[in-house]
Length: 289
Ligand SMILES: Nc1ncnc2c1ncn2[C@@H]1O[C@H](COP(=O)(O)OP(=O)(O)OP(=O)(O)O)[C@@H](O)[C@H]1O
Ligand SMILES: Cc1ncsc1CCO
Ligand SMILES: [Mg+2]
Image 1 (tube, rainbow, N blue to C red):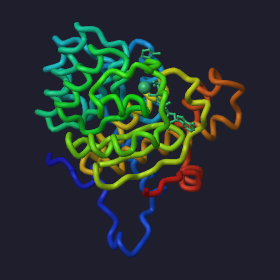
Image 2: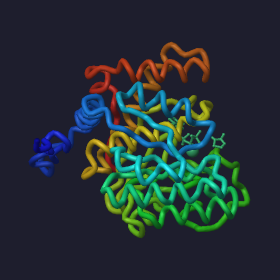
Image 3: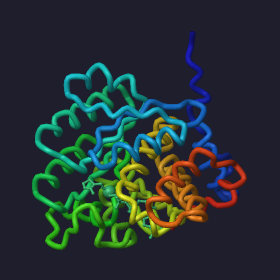
Image 4: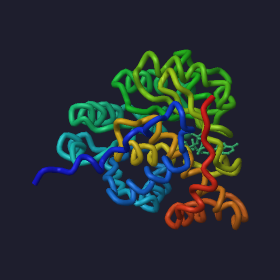
C-alpha cells in the first residue's frame, strides 16, 4: 500500500506576505500531528534525563526508546522517526554510538537533534560536541552558554557546567552563525527561546523561570523538538518553535497549581498530556525578531 505522505507535512500558509503567520495554530497543528502519528524517538541521553525525557515524550503522544548500544544502532535507528543525541553524561565509550546513530539517521533521511550539554565545560566535551555538529544535525538546542561555546570553539573558564551563565539573547548572533556554517537549525533556550536557520530568527516567549530548577527540562524539550521535527521534517524552524512553545505552555498551566520544582515537574507532564486546543491557541506566544 502506498504511504500517504500528504498528512506527514504541513503546507506553508498561502499569502504569508500579506497575512500575519498564525503561530498558535502552527504550534497546535504540529502537536496534533505528534499525537496522531506517535513517532518513535530514539534517545541517546544522559542518565539524569532519561526518566523525565521519556515521560515528556509519552505525555506528548510520542513513543520514546532510550537505546544507545552501538551494537543495536544499525538495526534499530532506521526504525525511529527521529533521534535525540544528548552529551550530558558523555564518556569516551558512548561517543561512537552517538556518531553512528547520527550517521544512520542521515542515511535513513531521518531528522536528529543535538543537545550539546555543558559544551564549554571541558575540552573532551567540546571536541565531541563539535564532531557531532559536523555530522549535520537537523536541529541543535542548547542554553546560551552552550551555543556560545560551540560558536567560539573554546572551553569557557567561567562555565557552570550544565547551567547557563549567559542569557539566551547573548547567543543569538552565535546561533545564526552556527546555523549558517552547519546548515542546522539552532535553538537557544532561556527566558525567551530563539530559533534560527541563519536567516530568520523566531522568538518563543512561553515558559516559566522555575523550569531552571528542574534538572533536564532542557534535555526533555530537546527530545520534544525531535518528535515535532520527526512529524514535519521539511519545516524544522516551525516544528522547533512549536515544540518549545507547547512545552512552555504546559509549564505555565502546570505552574498554576505547583508548589515548587518537584510538583511542577509532575504537573508539567500532566499538562502536556491534557493540553487542549483552546489553551494552546490562547497561550502560545511566538514572534519574529
Ligand atoms: N527564565 C525563564 N523563563 C521562562 N522559561 C524559561 C526560563 N529559563 C528557561 N526556560 C525554559 O526552560 C526550558 C529549559 O531551558 P534551559 O535553557 O533552562 O535548558 P538547559 O539549561 O539546557 O536545561 P537542562 O540542562 O537542565 O536540561 C526551555 O523550555 C526554556 O524555554
Ligand atoms: C545535572 C546534569 N549533569 C549532567 S547532565 C545533567 C542534566 C541536565 O542537563
Ligand atoms: Mg541542557
